[in-house]
Amino acid sequence: MSRIVRVAGAQMGPTQKADSRAQTMTRLLALLEDAARQGAQLVVFPELAFTTFFPRWLMEGAELDSYFEPSMPGPETEALFSRARELGIGFYIGYAEKTPEGQHFNAALIVQPDGSVLGHYRKVHLPGSVEPRPGALYQQLEKRYFEYGDLGFRAFRAGAAWQNGILGMMICNDRRWVESWRVLGLQGVELVCIGYNSAAYDPNGGTSEDAALRTFHSTLAAQSNAYMNATWAVSVAKAGEEDGSGLIGGSVIVNPDGVIVAQAKTLADEIIIADCDFDLCRQGKDKMFNFGAHRRPEHYTAITARAGVVEPASL
Amino acid sequence: MSRIVRVAGAQMGPTQKADSRAQTMTRLLALLEDAARQGAQLVVFPELAFTTFFPRWLMEGAELDSYFEPSMPGPETEALFSRARELGIGFYIGYAEKTPEGQHFNAALIVQPDGSVLGHYRKVHLPGSVEPRPGALYQQLEKRYFEYGDLGFRAFRAGAAWQNGILGMMICNDRRWVESWRVLGLQGVELVCIGYNSAAYDPNGGTSEDAALRTFHSTLAAQSNAYMNATWAVSVAKAGEEDGSGLIGGSVIVNPDGVIVAQAKTLADEIIIADCDFDLCRQGKDKMFNFGAHRRPEHYTAITARAGVVEPASL
Image 1 (cartoon, chains in turn green, purple):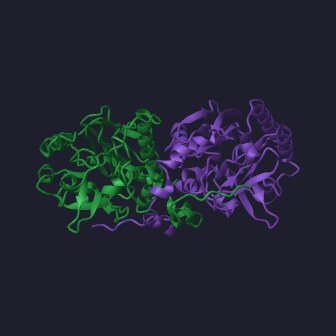
Image 2 (tube, each protein chain N blue to C red):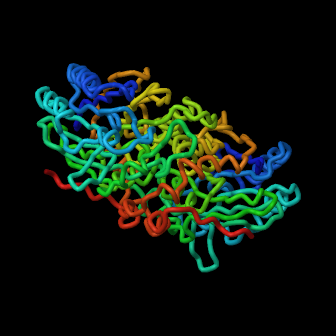
Image 3 (cartoon, rainbow over the protein chains, first blue to last red):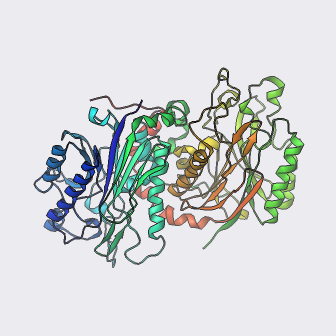
């Protein structure tokens, strides 16, 4: 048996603060058209795909508000939804969500080829800080601008167009946390969709980790967690230099053995593509990672009992 | 600051069923001497290091019993303990444990350079089956011969000879399960010691995974989980052809960035060695993987609530 869905990752090059929404939409539509021409049935865009990675700037009021979507689709995003429906292609996209009640989330949607929303996710693992780092030119203010996601890690059963596959979502930093993957794995996930904006270096001048090491970490997290949960994964960057702050590329599609089957070569707008056979998940799910046969939750209690570290006492 | 301990992995080539305990002890002592000559302070031996990987054979009674240690050290293992103490070198070693009450475990010990036992571990993630596979020449009967480990994943604070480092233990299959690593990570682990016997291919003739893929999986699990828990790891094989059943090699020492710093090149007895600075764990533990600041256990409940998969319903 095989249950094949052709999946594209739509890596984006940088989006500057001064770029207009219309400019960025033109790029999104070009990537969508390119993926559709190559026969993709699902295209995965990055985190916060409609704008620059704005949490690096300290802002407030109307300026900050301009980065958020009060509805999806809305006037500035509708063109992507309608063109995808015309092309019969679905997508994952990350965006900044503002709810009618005034809550803010770093969010993502998966939209099926018929235009229906399959799933909605709000980022759980927010990095950064609430308060700006004094004297730093570049900030990481996700904990200031967003509330912690309140929807958990839900897996969604897709329709027939996507072979009734089980899909899950993460956003950026979530992919480094094994718990995100395992909660999806415990729902039988067959394809994990991830968008990210990850620093290539410390834009404030620190030198502890370079772009090669950070790209290795991004790839390692996707490969290993795909393997250990016997799932496909597509992990897609916004890449390159945004207003003097660098982002890694390294977008990948990974199979359930943890093997990279497609990988971006640039730091620019670029489509990667692979035929993902969801039935290739069965080998891992039925044998090595047959959770029901082999997991021992009675020894995992610390994982849910506390957030932080408790070291053993000295002798 | 730096807190450096020189760590060796003592990969072993195959041990045949017909090999005597004395022959194997000679090899263990030679590896110990070699590691000590190179200045190692801790040497990590494989899983079930004193014998062949006997769970591949269906046995009972006195034959089966001969593979188990009723005490540690005992008459057939004492030479390793006494020589290590003389050399002032500590070790991790895997063995088959039989308790005074008649329980059986796939176990490991860490012994410090002064001869004191730092920690005792009993394998939690037992692969294989209770009942023999009918008609198969080679079995995997760990679930038949051993009880599930009942000591959990405890981390142990070492003495001054090992820089007061925090050490943890796994055995073989445990290393593929993110929960093993995370429970140790939640205790601030700085060095995870692992011994393994992992099939290089299906000795009964299946062809789904070859030795290269299986070695990749072993390495991927060690690298990724070391990175995601900001810990050193030393993962050590018994390798090569044991009575017609092949085992992968690929022993590695991995730093807290997930980067391999030493790797075995053979499928034979071979020492790998690295200076492990436990303070290199701080970068990860204090920033990216600052668990207290970034983990969200309220969204991890499925991990401890159940062992197996519950799929989402079809639409």
